[in-house]
Amino acid sequence: MFIRLLTVIAACYLFSGCAATKQVVQSCAPKFQLLMDDSLHLVAPLKQPQLNKYLAGKNLNSQREEIVVLKLVKGYVNIYNMILEGHAVLKVDGEDIYFRGSDTDSNMANTDGEWRSVFNKAVKNAIDKVEHKYSQCPVNV
Amino acid sequence: MIKKIGVLLFAVVFFAGCSTTPHKVSIQNKIETQVDVISIVKQQELEALFPIQNSAAVSMQFGLIGALVGSAIDASANSSSAEKTTDKLADIRNRLINYNFDDILQSNIEKSLVGHPSMSLGKVATFKDYKQAKKQMRSGNYYLRLSTEYKLDLDFRVPFIVTYATLIKKGATDRKDEVIYKNTFTYFADSLPEPKKDNVGNIAEIAKLKAARAELTNTEKRNSKRSYNKKMKKLSATEYTFDESVSELAHVWATTKSEQLKSYLTAGIQEVVALLAIDMADPILADTYKKDGQVLPGYPKSHKSVMVKDNEERDVIRFSDGHRAGAICSMPNLNAEESKLVCL
Image (cartoon, rainbow over all chains, first blue to last red; front, side, top):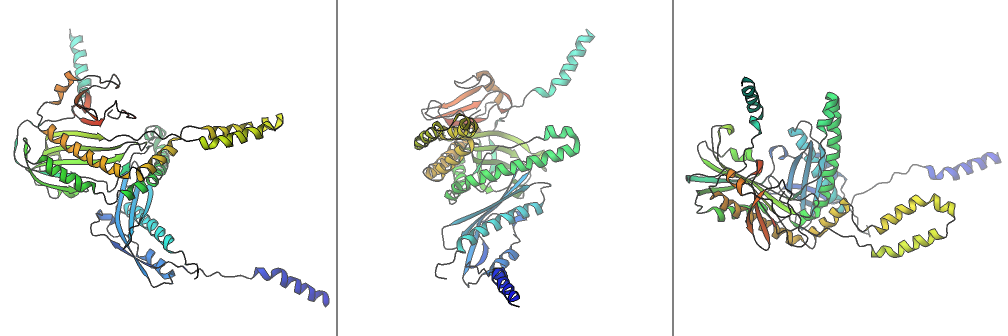
């Protein structure tokens, strides 16, 4: 009886650290809104970047009410020998900081879909950089 | 006799395509109707040349599969080079974000071509691609198409601008366009000096490494010889690798020389447009330059050209032979310090 009790105590002690813990990560990032700059020249396939889902996902994780407006000030795709290179430059409204995103992919058939894909990835890449900068929680939170 | 004629005919048929068409087409008579200028600047930001791998010719010898594998390898290598170049350009592009190359070019075109002796200037407009411009073009009208690129050279030392100029009488289709004038203008700005590695700080580390090696036994020395040599080579290197050198120069353009870069680009635009205006008024046919062509000092023997302008700061040359006959190139004077031969 005593040995059994000891075994249970030992087991409790040894496995106490094994209880599954779920760490809840609360992002300190604000909500984001993406706008196109009026002077922006975008060729047809890039005119509607499909980023609503991506931004909605980010905004869902946000615990803050603050909305940061991001302006797409430059967006383009370069074609080189068998590759497509997408570029996006975001400016945080009211601030003089630029965030650049880019992506390269092989250019198989030079279709609108390929252009859109490489450009969307570039914009996402730039949004991730903004999020990284704005997601740092204040020390006393 | 018949044999000789046969050989002659054979030669005529086979070498008919070997005569080169000169690059420049000159305006022979003044164009009385208005000429609209279409300035095309496809790029949205400063670009840089990067090494492009193309092994299509080799891989195609292994059939369709070979070609596919070859193109996949090329795409991967080129994608990596493009990414590296993009990273290096990021800070420079941020510094140039409010520099509007397109607008500066357009205003210079308007200033330089007003009252031109060979044509009367109509509207000047800038487009990002020719397809967009074509929607506004009407058959029978005259258009001066200027396609311009501005880039940094492969080693990031020299910014340059290239403008391809074509004056056409628009036909019903592109093939029916009548070319009235054609030429190319290249401008190379001053080059940055090659960066030199400062390894003074490594002297103490080299001494420490030598002292540590002196205390080793012969066997230990033998075993560590390769790693020792590698470390010594790295510490005593006085030159940057190509990648390191490009990164250093990118940093210089983005910091201390960012304003200089803007003024180089503006000066380049002014020079290219001024040369275009002069050249359009010059009715000399490109073949005429051939007899005046000579090998200028510092150039390889195969490179013949005519000096257009030579002052203390810049040399402007015109290619006199081959498919580039008539094309114009402006570069810093070769006698200037740290200058690099670029108009090749």
